[in-house]
Image (tube, rainbow, N blue to C red; front, side):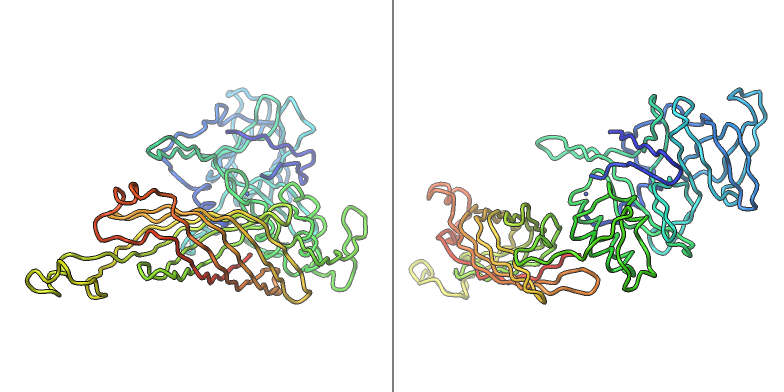
Length: 447
């Protein structure tokens, strides 16, 4: 899928932002050699009216080629697009910026820069990126696998679509594009977020931006309070001021009053919260279960989440029974703990319900009531269940805007299978089908 992005000045943008997490795939997006099908740019190598601003102060006007991200140089034609006109090649490290536009829309100017970005394992690389917003103290950029113009003169970002065969169908994951920022005295780009093709991108954007701009706490607090996303990048870049101190926050010429704190808070709304859960079962046939998941909420009060993890179930091991009861005694002997073995199971849980997010000034208190659905699967045993779940989380506000939560809860697991299905789904010796309870302990973190 190709998206169009338009800039009406070299340093302004109206790029639309769509979500999580958090993320290392951005490095791949600028330097991958994926074997998957790419959205090919049909006019690669075409030139457009533009100006090349050199670091030594010189300016060169003409027909400038729009470089691919990894190109080391660009070329400029002194006249029209005719190949008869000699090309002048200029190394990227000699260029401060390139400003160009499609001939059909000369009012939509785009700024391209050749900057250093951090890759994985401490590596660095120079890449051409698009400037989407620039202020007195910070600037923002977006990258892709390639760039081009569509027939309407809008810039388009080009990435790789991932095709995943799930066995029951095919899933298409649309490309994501990294968003970078660089403060006034920085020498390298810092990855702060991704746009397109990812989940919870609004939450991830706020997290990445406020961590990077944490030396302007008033702006960061406002970004989190207003649930700003990538569509607000212009206001964020223009409003950032690390020297603000006790001064007022001004956005678009309007002085912003400090956000009003309410008892029923929206601080957790539409945010991605990662949690680790330990479920202690009441049924002795199961051992303590563990899961890693993501939860969030909408409209403050509607909470939902999912986690994946591991569990284990005990079963009567016939070999142990025979060894523990010589002769034929094992046939009628009662089952003892020494006769049991464990099987590791894959575990999943989903839940949805209501919550009451309370801001008690120094801490958050979040009671919740949900309906849960889950299951456990192994080579010789499987079960599906549903049931009510109650939780209570206590959250602590950290200086960087993150929230750390400690919680507990209760879940009753009611099997969904009939007695006949239970017998067919398990090997002999598994009796862990009756309803049982879990006492929940979980640690959560909102970045």
